[in-house]
Image (cartoon, rainbow, N blue to C red):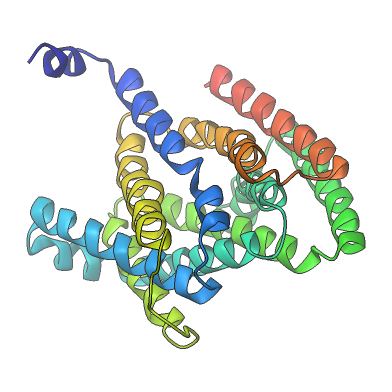
Length: 292
């Protein structure tokens, strides 16, 4: 009872920060689980779509009851676009991890906030300030640097899909921002169902054997479903920009998990470019939040 009371006494800032931090901590081993699994790419995509869909759908029905479908249909074209972008990022993330170093994929995804700024200027007419443009230029120069290294190592396909994932996340953020009055959580849930349905076209086997019987369900619940719910709730208490700031931790901690367990070491170029990107986004985000 004491713990429940202490949670109620937290400020909105503390609640939102706690939710975002816990969500990211759950997400950090995600790339490691993908590496440890022996399931083929499309099998992973299927289970990462179906299990979280089933889990979160049941939770949403408990919370919203039949209003879930009312909210879904009222999201209109924003909901349709969000389903498409959400589904795309869920697919390209897994395929990217399977075709390049984990660090490369996560570094590419870390560029999403900067891509959001560019799209915001074009679509929402929210022109970025001087600090943001400087950050964008530094970030893209770092990406080009990593891409050149990937071409030499034969990881270009995986890096490209990592960048596509970042673009999808950026587009999704713009859709959410342009539809502030609409609840797009049910659309994201349906997006998970679309992911599983698309994977059915390519999947070769549904069989989970040996350690995959534990790894795959554990990954889908701990690293996908639970963070999805927490990240959905966190922006109710703190700005979305602050939530995104916490996700820089995944870019740092995710590759460390992989390096410690399976000794997958990123290239020097990825480390150098990644440090520049993370530092640039972190400083930019900190200055923006401080000014606001």
